[in-house]
Image (cartoon, rainbow, N blue to C red; front, side, top):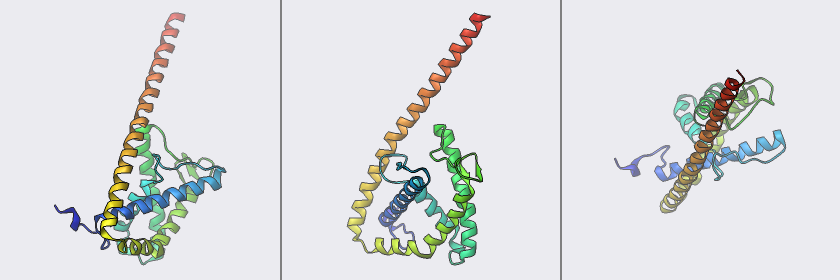
Length: 201
């Protein structure tokens, strides 16, 4: 299969990769600003060191396929934006819990939250974000990307992709190592407590 002929909204694979990283970067910026406003301090909201929250890149790409039939109906776009983004957020949280034993956001300080991983405020905001992206922002992004020289787009896409994959791999390995270490410590503590109980008996 010739990857160079793959297109999305008349963008080639290199432009699509840049599109993905633009949305991942914008998502990272939005997360950092929200945390600053809510908690009063800056925090890196990406999984790795690079300033990307790839959940936004994947989420936006999926949304463009799901919402294609209603992209010009802003009422339906808002409703389904709220529902689908919240479902995607919940699914992502469950995957994180399985892999790392924790979720990298916490809504417990907000009203109408569910186990700290979902909240009404966030759900309502997803609908507004869907309207903003479909109604305005994506036209700007795609217009910018289609204006970039194809060779330049390819080089930037390769550098970003390789850099992020390496960054992610390193931090994923560290995260799994930390999780296994904590599990081992917990197991050793349980064994120690059990042995102590036997001695008392």
